[in-house]
Image (cartoon, rainbow, N blue to C red; front, side, top):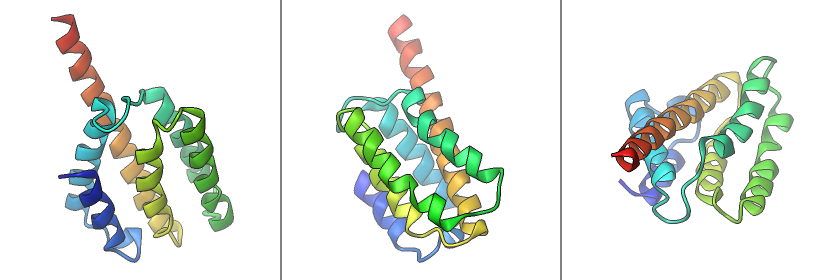
Length: 134
């Protein structure tokens, strides 16, 4: 799988709720590992991803607000600029998802996908640090 494959897979659906769970998990697994390895750019830390994920978790506690949710796009752009582009791949993938999030159900799938990316990223970071210790 490649970054382009992940983006194409997401863009092939008009709505996040149409993203089959097996594809969602496969894409999240590959992408989380990709972000941890830093294949195209410097690897992302979990805290860099969690900064944005925290906003999503806050949104989950309330009702879906499309306007507020759409404002994640400029926040991702800001974070990408602040981190000298290290988060640009995360931004590109999440913006693909944001454009396909139209209601509460879509938002739930988006949040699950983001959480899965974070989980697989953390797992990949752990494996990487174990290798360094040996």
